[in-house]
Length: 67
Image (tube, rainbow, N blue to C red; front, side):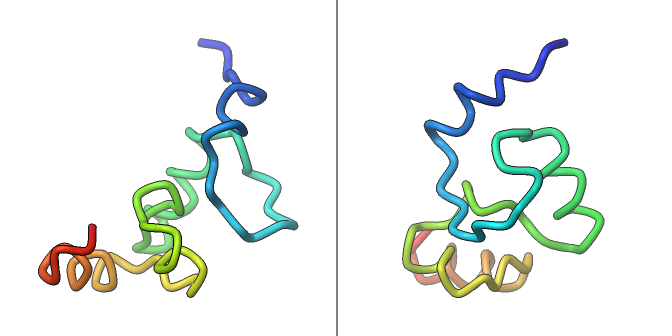
């Protein structure tokens, strides 16, 4: 399967500019899961900008009704 990197970049909300995985969703997801994290795209904008992409942070946001 071909990666639609250009199309994916239109939807990517990752604010970490030097990221080499931007737009390559399969690479991004594999990297973050390996680090016990979720990618930026599952977080609301304010939460994403904290760079805390941990499962625990996401669970707190869900519990608070913010994600």
